Length: 260
Image 1 (cartoon, rainbow, N blue to C red):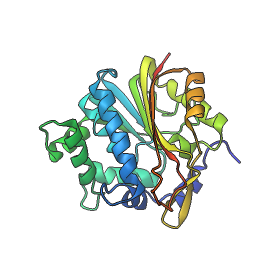
Image 2 (cartoon, one colour):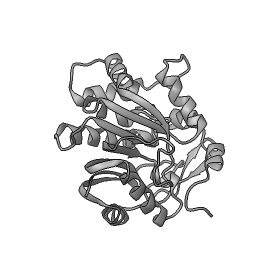
Image 3 (tube, helix red, strand yellow):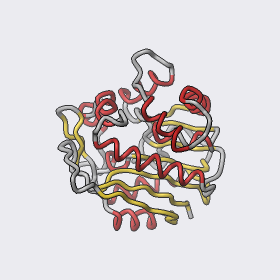
Image 4 (spheres, one colour):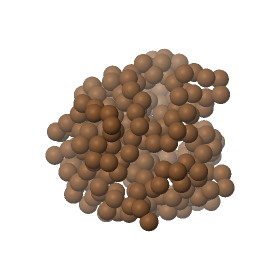
């Protein structure tokens, strides 16, 4: 087995639109409700604290999701978004181009506007984000330059959510991916990460999509050994009364780290 998920296999198992419909209608009662509230809340708090500064940001494994960029677009005016499969890219482009069958992110956008407490309305928030997305590039975290063949200037900040657990088939390759990502960062650049704890899979329709089960002990070790200093690591445990059959996750994590 490869240390990294095979692209064609992943594309066959992962239907990006069905993934969005299953997990990203906030308030639908899916496990995505807890995840979104946890992750979006932590992005908001971290960015509002002033601890993360700069102008250039690269999001690793963006497509088909944009929730993780709704707060960062208030701080960064030069955002690069990335994709790994053509199906993910197609779903992202529908949203970027305002196509009528694009996924409806309104429940998530509304929530972010509320927790940010600013006067901007949902339409303005979406247009601000779209205006700050300057590039859409292919990404492969197994490569020393994950954006190859594109040579991007070093970024002030990287964001990656629910990406490395899907891309990496072993704990060693997870560390390799983090080191590869550091090649995209300026010295003292920031890394914001979020994902699931303890998940071996999540369901997208009839398919069980692979996830590398990580825990806090592993994350602290691998992030530190990959050239970053952890500023903050927070977690949220799965509620005891939670009954979600479409994943065996144990909780969620959010990390703010800085390249040494």
